[in-house]
Length: 216
Image (tube, rainbow, N blue to C red; front, side):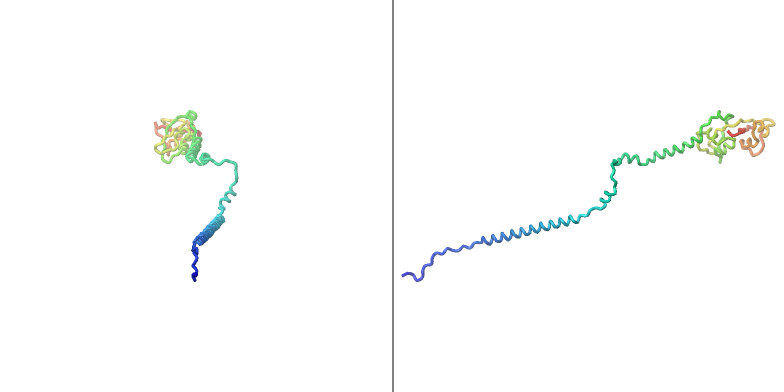
């Protein structure tokens, strides 16, 4: 008699595998990674485009480029710029030379022989100038300056000037100023002025300066 309950056949045990789940997870991760990379790329491209659009063109460069004329002439070198610079020392020297030139022209050297007469020495007194001294001896100012071309400034009690006169007369018996003046063809006033006299009087043995009758 067969068993009432048939024997159970050997059933192959079912194996549970985790491979599909792992594969699914890997696929999901890959998709997420691709989405992340795509997002980063899109965001980088948009930021780059914003940077490009935000660049501001320097208008001053354009204006300078437009305003400056184009020239074929070479740019000035440092030597040329130095030559154009004012040189104060040279300019001052030129000014001094120019200032001296008129003085030389105004005071040409004059020889005593060209005037004639006798030469005396006059010591400059207070308040005297070339002009007043020339007037005293009936000379031209240029003549006094020419005889003393080395003297530029007269100083009281220090400067001694060379003066040309007609002669020097020694007063003798009866030589009153009127007689002496008549002898040399000059006026009595001219003799008084040349000798610094304030009155018509002369002493025997006195030396009288006799100026020229006309200005030399």
